[in-house]
Length: 478
Image 1: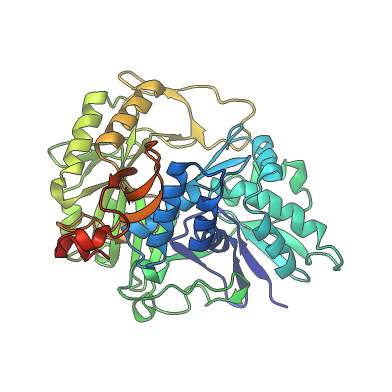
Image 2 (image 1 turned 120 degrees about the vertical axis):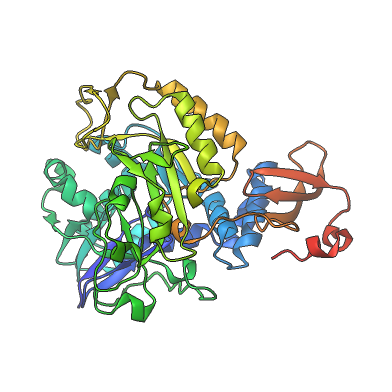
């Protein structure tokens, strides 16, 4: 039987992994997201007495939006709502990742503890045990968020399925994070005997997020053979390669989109930029002259990038707050400029700045603080530099701007790089749904307009047939 490439939860659900030729694919991330975002599941959860009124309203609104299968801004927010409502003792989910309820994601001990306690991915682990029986499993880990599930998969696949002759010829860990942290991972006793791969499969953006009118092939969650990596021209097949982190920009005329440091994007050749279908730039600062600070302190002229791209290609800046020497005033200026669409570039998200453990810094002196001895999977460095915001100040700024600019989607998702800005029209915001239920306002049952972009709701007075009382343009919502 073919080897099987297993994709653990939790990674970008708007991308798809391309397995090597002759290798089957089992995408557990897609399986989990589809299961948690199933409209019937959300409605059933909303009907349970344990669900509070606010949770129930937003769950019903997300279910209604997901049933449209529009694969737009509203769909992303509905999936994010579904993931956020999925309770678990070990992890808290967001649309673009997870947070451990206890411990640090840079500690293998804490990650192993989360793997043992997590209940959300239990069905996916069991599915992998069944599919991988009698086969060699390659578990690909590109992001740290996947480590709890990857650890659980290693244990399950090596133990085998009850009543079966083991779970395959062996387990191999591969992927970008495995390559970067192989030395530390080899020292984890629970991974003894695992084989190590020095490769990471390519990723493409799921066609439903970049091809108008295309329907997503969700599949059954069981393994199926995929196309050979790079076996067909992206231009001919409609594939858009996803480039993030250190992944190389493809050659051979293949279309691509990416989330990269602004300094790296500015250094790309015109030919490569001419094949770009969407670009999310990582910046630590932007000013009114069109200059930005990249994630390693390099200064970048943003003004040439939109002109070098094909017409209509969206360009987004994800702003990291708290870089060395970047003051609160500079952050405010950056957000205002990007939110206003300066230089044709829009704001694609806000997040705390994190300095890579081995990354240089080119914009002044930085003192790197000693690492925590318990962080054996260290990815980030604590630092100090003049004029740098303290963590509490970063958190305050993020809360203030998130409140002023509600509904910013994280640039970490590939779909956010290739979709244009979602601006509510003069009639109806597609992120809004009308649902009925017990009101969180304490006034009993009613009909509510729930907006997943702003996270707000309003009680409507006209009852369940509200759309019939609205003006025509407003009534014609998606």
